[in-house]
Image 1 (tube, rainbow, N blue to C red):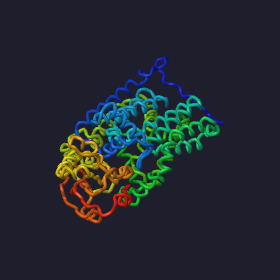
Image 2 (image 1 turned 45 degrees about the horizontal axis):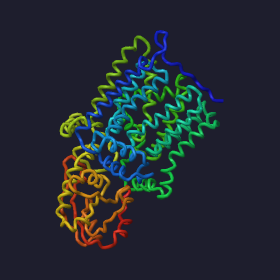
Image 3 (image 1 turned 90 degrees about the vertical axis):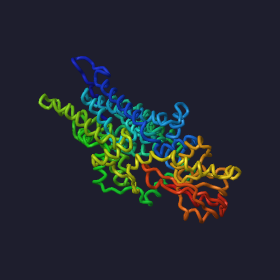
Image 4 (image 1 turned 135 degrees about the vertical axis):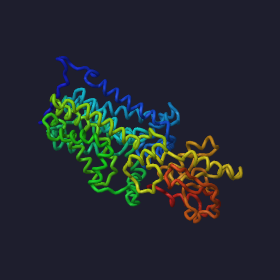
Length: 523
């Protein structure tokens, strides 16, 4: 039979400690700092390549897309409707989600029995986490993913503490929307299932409420599931293509684990490793041991499947919280009390040194000098030739300049021919940039063959006249009679593969309806 453990709330001077006096005032202040950092950093660089694509997806709302579930497109559509298309507008909710991570992490430390230091150091660790600095800076599924994982973990904590099985319904709701945000929510759900099986709470699996919650999650996820079935699982095809292409950097198990320390921030390793051990082996952590099992199951899955290192990031706030409680208890003695401010200072100092690598608080020329002086660089995720900036930053440069070059070529086309001339993007960043910046240059929306742009098709264009980005002359000549260079795209800070010739192609050799299936680019 399941055992439910009621963990007492922190007490002070014999009275119940209020939300803020108990440490949440500190947590809230750190959350505001997190928000302010991201709002400040928006001024230096431009739109990230994925943001251009998500903006395009928000103009084509659907139950699914080749490379993600639909929630991110709806989030961006909401931002554009109420705030506009500016960088500050579309990045406000990710920044807010980052502040939310800090609040949830601090709250979990409180629920684990932590007092002010545990809550504060948990919030500080979440603030200074290198991976969160990166992903909370721009709009993507990754900014919101930890809120879904940790929201579900928070519900599990409450179920363990109160024994209220009806809370599994809330778990199901959070998990369902988490699946609509990113399919990786399946790994967290699987981890919780295994964690329950191998814990004292396995009897919960015999209760109806957990299965009712699972049904709720399925119902919420159902539109995307049906879309994938109807479209023959394009997401799985995409993953297969990526693996075959060799695009991702291959890591050994040891390299993967080392990069966890780098992504989470080295000083934070004390907390997340300590938190994992506290959950696994301490008496106080025993009621929540299933969360440690969840983390280990997800880690095993990522190692086995050669997952990208950042796929583990959504799991760390709960380990920070557990580690904060463990550290607080360990430093409770008078002779160790002095280590608390020293460790907090180390988290701030080491995190601040690495922060410019993850969030663009420095202008590009200053950042390049900083990176060289510190001999630092973010871990590489993909195999590409690099320029002066890491890929994450390089992908924020050159998009409007590229659009200007395309506009000159497009406006040079005779007016009558121009009305039937399509603009083709070789990847979703190129096409998305035309869609976002092109209006002020008099350009139509782009077509393309990359990811969901392929589904959106050639629209009304016949292909008789088309301006193409991101392809070589040799790739184009088999399909068009005339291929003419009409411009050159280059930006010193952009990715090297974003330097290319722009071609105008005339006289298509086959109907575009026959050409389109041949050029699908899902990778």
